[in-house]
Length: 401
Image (spheres, rainbow, N blue to C red):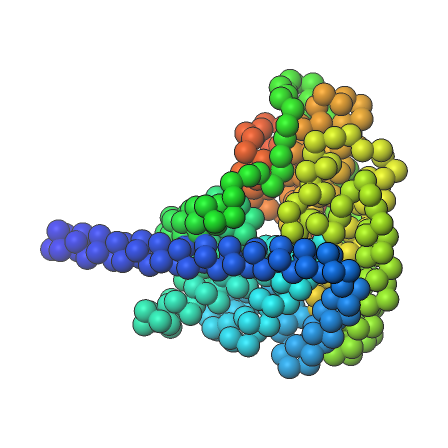
């Protein structure tokens, strides 16, 4: 009897593993295609000087889709979690609208990738489960696996994506089966993605550095600073959420367009930091991670990014928050690095990890993501800054369920 049950268990786990591999392969191709489209539209729009026309078109597009389905205006992370908790399949209209909206948004605005990726991955996981006639009771589970695979590929962080989705989906409840299948799917999708789109770090660190016990002092300082900035960001975000509620959902993207045009023009003419390429090729993160930048320029860029982040989330534009948070944290690390330029890489990585944790309350995700994105292992200083930020900003979270 025990042997028979063991055989059934092995067969079940083999089927789950194969299905996770299939999800990972499909998602890896889809994420690669989305990245190609984002870069293509970005180059086309800037080369032909159509950027302002694209912003106008994006606002009209977002308004029309909001009118057809109010779910489009909800941030991708929250919308995906809603579908997963309620075990509802993502409507194909929403999935398609988000896909093209993401192309239009990420190709021109400094938004994050993980929010839309989570929704798109959720949909793909569910559609494949339907195709393979898996019971409806498991739609949520495989949708979660798809979400992990898409985030892992699109942000080049398979392990970080596993913990990101895990911490947002399950909180502190350990789900070993989910972690194993997510790692399988996200590793496959990541492998396909980097094969098709290239293997290079999102946070490139060119200088070699070594940390000492004294470097834990600025690590704690960065934890404190990022916590303060996270609180300020939350207040600004809540302000714009309040203003957005004063406008009908249909008109929100169009109503806020003049302010977006103003911020876009400032960022467009900013020659020191190419903020508008954040979601296309991560160039702003590279700039603040590899060279010291004057503090006044960094402060200006941080303010611009916080305003962009708050407005895009509040007024129904597609986008996420991880890349903006990484940029803000790395910029704060760059400011601290003026005290010791030889430790620029150390401080930018520490600041990026602390900022993710301070704004999202995901300490494990923060450490793992930054290590994978930079191809650097810098656990102790990152953990110190992350824990400081976590304890100081444990009541702060930009996207609450």
